[in-house]
Length: 262
Image (cartoon, rainbow, N blue to C red):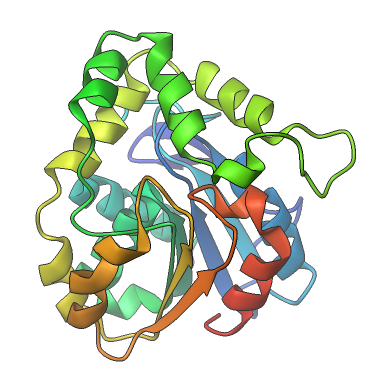
């Protein structure tokens, strides 16, 4: 679905359905250098269970036009502008990695617009290594390689996809490769520079769930302790065997976890 946000043509996946004001809405927010396709399975599932699903492409990503935004706060404000453009008063937010910070910031600063928050593969602060930042700034393919390699648990480096004929590593690498020059660096920098995460977590009043991969090497479970302590009674689900790319590595377990908060 194409729609206009802040003067730019933007895109969100809705499972080919019009937004129904009588149904609850769920917004899915992708991670760095990615697009709405990472949440296709979850979006289809919740659409078939009576929800409006809005899997967005952030500015400059996927099918959305405009320059990539360079701060988490700007992306969170863009989510509110997207809700306004779609005439959605309130929604649950599901974000992965970068998208999880965007969702949290949005829930903290725009509390009347968010009634539930799910953060997938997350931590705060979310520092990015100089190796990745430097490669991304240079538009060096090594940035894609590193993020793909570290984004999966070791057991999922070779095959193992539950969907016959699909290659997890190759699909993720291709998703990074089709991003526009400069987009990954903008996203990685936004994550690296976002210092208000723990403060924002303390301001979130809606139900919160953290869905973490036990073998996540980019946002390890142990690094989430300050975030967990800042939220008011968060539900924390740790998925055995999963790394950072939970939507692919543990799709069914992710759906089960999301049902508990959405």
